[in-house]
Image 1 (cartoon, helix red, strand yellow):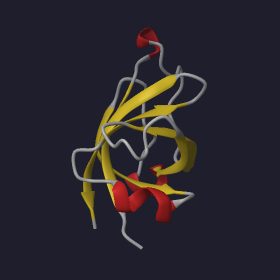
Image 2: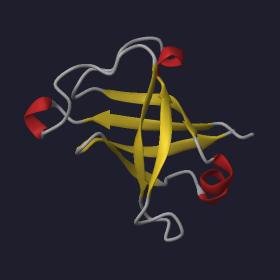
Image 3: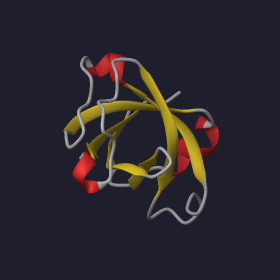
Image 4: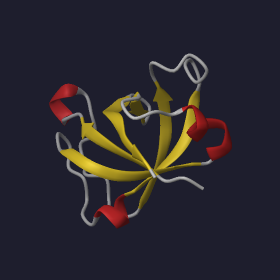
Length: 103
């Protein structure tokens, strides 16, 4: 199975994002994929592998490379491309991101 890596920027609390850091664990949330018509309009379950990144992710922080896994990888990964943009959701938009590599 291919591995997906992305750059993400968490919104700060002032911007309406999380008030606390994403902890050092596998963090699950819905992902909305943009600029890919076949995936638009539907959220997909994903996990950010924060433990592999190595430290909690603070509100307002940009992470240049983090691994993302999908609960339905066969449905999502074949349609992703480098540069595909997305938002992460936790009752509200908490982050914006972009696919940087598919290995």
